[in-house]
Image (tube, rainbow over all chains, first blue to last red; front, side, top):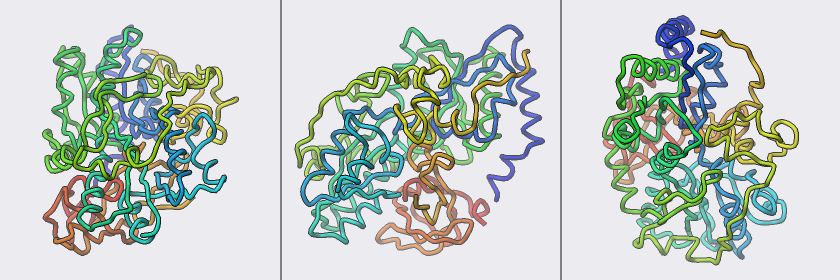
Length: 371
Length: 82
């Protein structure tokens, strides 16, 4: 398939890997953060880090929305799912995220009507098919997914659907990046920027990274050559003493983003004063809620939710993993008490979580060429 | 676990979840309902799905779109989905 096959060409991959070797300074340890969970998944699925020299380390960022959801929000979702006459809908990975007393999957086993959907539009369809029930959509995701929720809420209103509600957990990418860059325990040389988030917001919002923090960022696609090329571009900036936002994923990402998507998000959502991130704590203006115009569709206003903050399990080090401070296998419970079948932390649940990626692709220990 | 017929995305550890992976799939537009801003699209295996196209309209049959969570988030050239 065009746009896929050529970005998986092994010979081209080896050429780019050789370019990377030529750009690294011996004795210098490079730490690059891939922000997006999709990149983490690609890196391990295709073994990209095995093509990199030992002194180029890829650190996994907080770009998996399921991984960063705090336990208290899961509890709030479960409380909504147990309301009378409610059908609760959510994406698949969300079902297994542990709350303080079980997951949505457990709540389903207890009798709550919880259904997995692939899009907000699916949830709206369920609402239309069940006019005697109230249907709640558990909205989650970065700016890639938020326009989809926004358009569905507009459609619900336009179609006169009165039984469709949304519990909004959408988050934005810039505030956690800023929080990470302000974090004293993290030293990074550059970033691989999220590809599909940038399809919506564009590459411009990342200009603060070179401007305020002096770090390069390259927005990248998700095929193996995309990621490898982005690594090469970041290292080239460092080697040449440049520091800017570059767009490797030009075949999909316009620098200014999708203006219609930004408009519809601005109409339907507004920023929460703060939102809790697993491992990162409360971050100002990092979460979205429904705007006043759409408040009648807000499930959190329609039904009572506990809204209780729940501390992460003590043994779990998802916070350090999400900040890139430790590698997944350095966590005390990785692969023993915490596995994809019986996860303790969110990073082991979602397939794009760093722990699950390490676990599933067997990345425990390996030796690489030292430059 | 179910598979999304159109995108082939499965919510299993070895495949990936629509939201967390920022998964987006290229689909080919078959038919457009411009008034309702919906399009019937097909994936590489010919499986059909209905897609929200408000963010990338206008489209014509044969166009390509990059679809995330049931919504087209970017246009693609027709040759990308031929």
